[in-house]
Image (cartoon, rainbow, N blue to C red; front, side, top):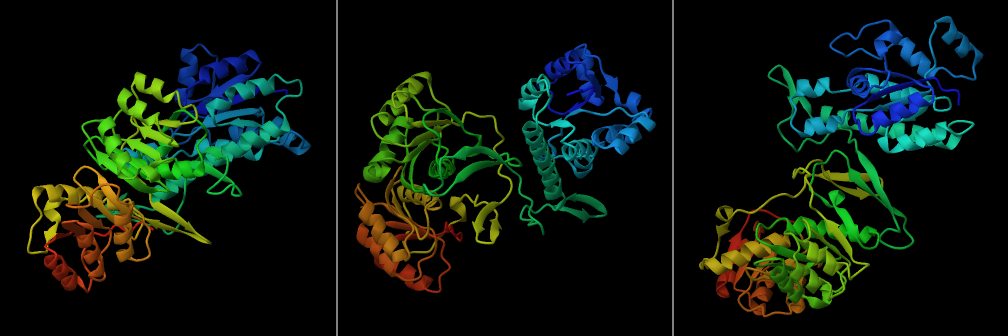
Length: 523
């Protein structure tokens, strides 16, 4: 490859000095501008400024720097076209053989609450233009947008015949993904902008659903298979999200994650982080089969496991506290697929290391704890979008509708059961004490069957428990089943045309019943 000019302009500066030195050593002239040029000059790398190439200064507060024929003709010219070569020669334009550009992460800026005018100024124009031009002319220009590819670029340049066709295509594919992601972030942001009092601003309401939904995901990894072995699958992360999520987790031990592992880890993590006290959640097929609080991770785990040991076998375990030695040693005695927690003590890592296949996910991260974007569900031919269900119940917003009010202990159990029921597939009934689930009835086609099934699943005494229903009772039969099981208090949304009948049934059984006014269907 008879390269002579490399154009470098990057936001992510990691590795750029080493790359520039490598290119210079291989006979390249480095052309750059702005912060990148400053960074290279500080490292004593010889740099030609863009203004020297264009014979035109940067203007409009830097809005116009690289948008010039002397730059873009050098990138877009086809080396195998005599007319293109003649045009370059006639206008004294040098061909650009390597373009190294990555863009300012616009989505990070807006995620931090930048006002509209600041966000507007952070929309890159020249950068995407250079990347797209180089990617379009990939047969003649090597375009690199990912610092991880710098060593590959140098390695390919050192080949006798230069950068090969497959690598050029690989670089171009990543480049187009890079600009597509960027454009999607800008388009998604602008979909939320409105005119308010004569000025432009992001809509105050967060339930704005754009006319066109631009999705912005990047592959994390290919998976062995999907829900079933005959289905291929991959895991993608939401690049616009700052959510403290499974996508941000770091696997420190164990087998590769499966499609179902990721679904269950997500379900476990979302539930366990609902609690402020030390908690443990055990998930099986996205439903909690054991949820408990404790003085620490070990006690919470032991209580959660006791809820339903049969279902817990082979499940996913989540903690909302750093895992200590005691909890890890207990986990090492049983078979579970994975564990996720905000960190692990050294002795805990050693104990878990005895289970080589156990997937250990570390959520000890500095990710911003802010949920963005929409909850999406695919259907054949389309996608459903909704807000995330982030509602957290406040006791003073509840309405006691029965003659008997809940006791202090019943209130604690009611609120605990309600929190868990939010994460159970509908129709859902959950029996619980103030510190652990006792019986979970998930995914039943009728609510009365959910009440029966939850009682059937109970391994611990049901007498004196509280019951939570994710939606209203359409008839009194569900309440009759709950009373029959031994529960003394019920929490439910209310709103049925049969509410009076249901309340009367609760009074008849001397149950305390609370209405929340909120439903938590989870299909």
